[in-house]
Amino acid sequence: MSVTSTYTVTGMTCGHCVSSVTEELTAVDGVTDVDVRLDSGAVTVTSSRELSRDEVREAVTEAGYQLA
Image 1: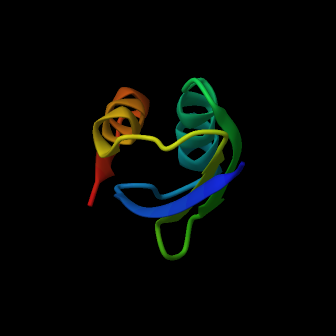
Image 2 (image 1 turned 120 degrees about the horizontal axis):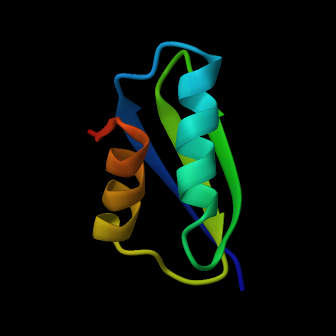
């Protein structure tokens, strides 16, 4: 089973931002893929289980950004 969710992350301005968000989200248990679109701030997370919004927010905050 694969669960895909899309979130909006604010504050990202460059490739390093994308890398930081991707790294933190990939570290969340169950996450199998992360696709970050810098131009729109859209972050699509694919996981093997349902993720809580708090888990995603915590990872994004750890990377230094905000979940919209």
